[in-house]
Amino acid sequence: MPAGAPVRVHEGESCPDMPNQVSLSDVPRMTVDEAKKLSDNGDVIFLDVRKPEYYQKQRISGAISIPLKGPAVRYWELPRDRDIIIY
Image 1 (spheres, rainbow, N blue to C red):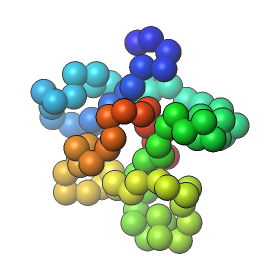
Image 2 (image 1 turned 180 degrees about the vertical axis):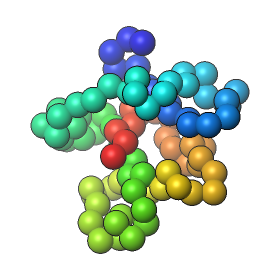
Image 3 (image 1 turned 90 degrees about the vertical axis):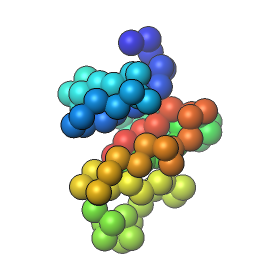
């Protein structure tokens, strides 16, 4: 996958709307400094996949909360014009 290409992650059954499916172990990692630089440039959004109570206590400003343990993967809520940093 080319560097900087959007990565959409879906665990479980296949999803035809997500052609770039990868396993979580294939998702590139980055440092906090790298994430901050991309965020400061407005190039990414943050996706918080923690439990809602953790999101309510503390989160990255502007992050979208979609817990992994939810009833369904709500990928349609994610913008398609920016890369996504999952935490």
